[in-house]
Image 1 (cartoon, rainbow, N blue to C red):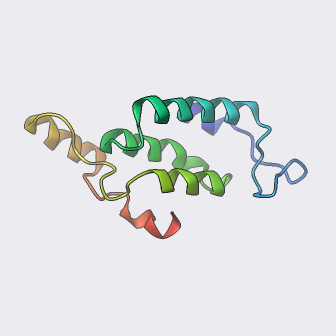
Image 2: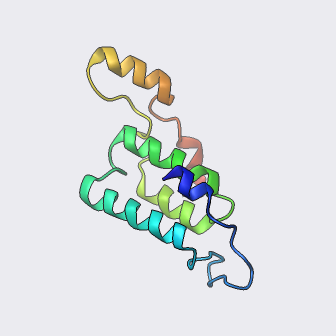
Amino acid sequence: LATCLCECAPPSTAADDEHGENINDPILMAVLQVVEYLIRHYQIHARPHTAHMMLRTFLPIHLMYPQLFQRVLSLVDLTTAGGSVGNSKSRKTNATMSGGAGTWTFLRPFA
């Protein structure tokens, strides 16, 4: 999904909607439909590790689609995103790799 989002064309001024986002991009629409499915069926925004991955996926496009990124931020609990999962041995490894709980709290003013 991250690769597809990076391949999205920057929004043009002619095809912008009232929020300044190009909703007509077929790649962006396909990615958003997949993310919507994952949120509805697997609640990826509510689990710490998957919420962390979701934020990392949408971070590269936050300048091109600020309204979309703000919506993603509003869905994710920023205090637990990036938290550890699994047993105690893997928890330490996951917390080190993902930055630990509270890694994304600096984004709170933008949500």
